[in-house]
Image 1: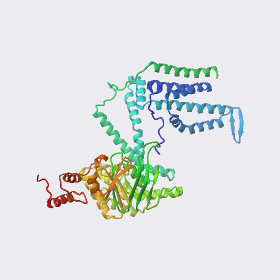
Image 2: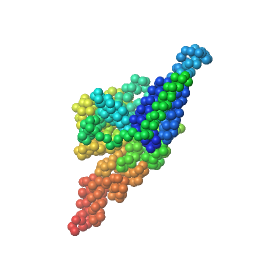
Image 3: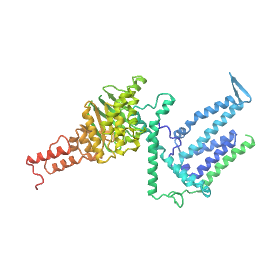
Image 4: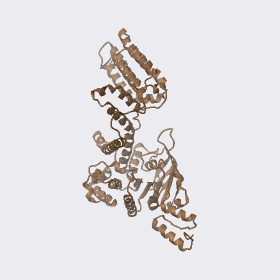
Length: 267
Length: 293
């Protein structure tokens, strides 16, 4: 029950993509998102896809891993595509009973599906090649300017890092409690929906109790090691921006701008 | 109910190492079996096979000579048998107090019997019986389980499994983290329960050999997913080198072994401190020179 939920898990490696600064990867994904939402040109999407293909190759990831990240959204893609195909008004291609398929509908469906797939592809690539801690470090540095207006950026980044760190622990714990309750005759698999929701109580209550206990213990352990928040804190692993990062970001920027330009030209 | 494992293999990842590697084990009705092994030896994985939470990937589990996961059976029949198995093999997990969830002790203990669909009166009777079996005062009934002491929480959790009145009671390191007194009490309560129910089976997992000496009739040692030794605990402790499996023989056994190297051989059946003391006294009367040098 808890095994399938490994979406976007880090896959350790030393590829070019792995070694990029996390800030580069975050900014690149941000740029691509803007580009994907800003343009509706198929050729523009093709350009982005090309970049992603190349990056995937550079990342030397097992394709199965990437596929696992993409698989959960396929249903979503399919549903949006179908809705668009059948509901958009425009030049009618064929009629199937009460349903009509329009040219605009098909175009929109292709565009939206591509957009979704490319979005998830880009983010999956980022999470697969960036360790969670690096990711939060990157976010913290990128948003460091908000510290000026008293946003607790460091604390938020730390919270995120801790949350990420404890996801597998939580799943393990849930699995164990579920098994324990099943041994006392609890039934998580059958019954009506309200019954099933109610059946989750013996799982959720202990999970909450142990999470709170764990949080308290963690807080104590941190205080015992003199944690006082972000101010004046140094780092063991420093982020280093290199030429590689500048060049990569420039390339992504170029692709993004290209996608926009293609739209303007009318492709 | 008798359980039998036949050449059971299991692993958690498709290509990973086997966690259980050909375990064959017979557990007759009414027996008291100890399972010992260091951390990561596969003890807990083995236990989860006994009540059908995990299925063997190779080999099989026989319950009274029948395989509940028999692939020739229909899906429904297999599901029914699995439910049946879970009800009759009560599994007390490690740190069972982590599964408490109800508002009151009484309700929490009643959770299992309620799932069995028993009438209210029977549920009440079972709650009281299992509370009594674990030495819990009925005054605690209305209390929240989260307000109890660690030792009490542990006993309430064990009572929750006992209230299912399982034919086979499986306990995974039930004394871990308890203080010496709590440990002694829990062990004595389990022994009493066993004496009151001679036809029920206890399977007890621990890496504390003094507990095994007290409780188990037969001890099975597993190491890296394989059974490496089995027999009466006293014999194993005196004949096998437990240290190589990450275990330590109980103090009584170490004493006897030490005396043996100095020429005093005492015969014992059980490694209970009293019996060992008597055996040593008997051996010395026979005129063996000991400590007089």
